[in-house]
Image (cartoon, rainbow, N blue to C red; front, side, top):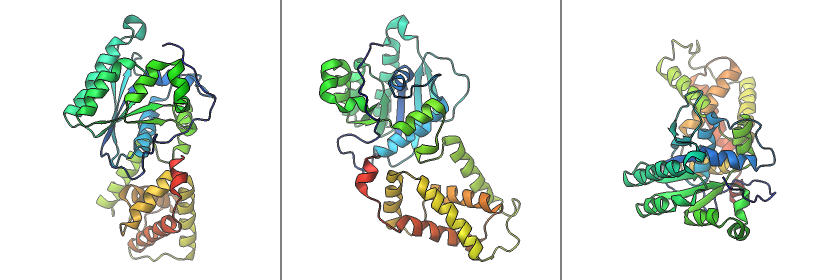
Length: 322
């Protein structure tokens, strides 16, 4: 891959050109050229010493889709690579392509491009996150857009100085011009991909989220067998309220400004707690207490969650800046 300039600016994760938090694009899919993503990682202030953590691709790109307005979870990621896998990954489909040196990336462009147009023609998704810098993808992107697909290019902070990019790397600039939107990876995303540190992403990695869902469903399906409290009508007392409030406060501090704004807006127009949030906090509280919750305790916990979320309106500008 040819050398590109890179500005020494702090990576900044945001939807480009005024992408609103309230936009609704339905389901999203990511198409990732691993060679490009690895090159991009090496331009960052703290480049990886080894390869990127593939098991974090799905949660990182899920967050990007969310920032671009997707109103459903990232369906899956397609990873185009010439590196053989060492493990199977949930919701990541590998597409093996020849090494770039063997054909100049022609097979990758053809495979990725055809997949992009198929997604558009068959209605597989409403929004596609595309991580690549190959200008030969422009006709495929154009065809997908004509069929109604929103295409978002994934880049880093260097693309924000578009005038300089156009002067020093016009082919990459032309590719970015073709996209509907552009979104860049921030430091937390690079830390996740480089070091496997997902704490700063503002959401749980895919496998842990799935574990939470299974445990939650098992509890409700087989409540008595899994140890429902002896007194199902047990009322929360002062010590319980204090402990649960600490768990909720800790969770709320960990959420990103954008996630806080999303939850605030969602709970303003509903009476309950979103299922994913409910599952996540129910599991955290249950682990903290060392037991399952009674029905009155679950009701109290949900009221406390709503109180924490609706206590103060998040600042929209702050959310968009993250």
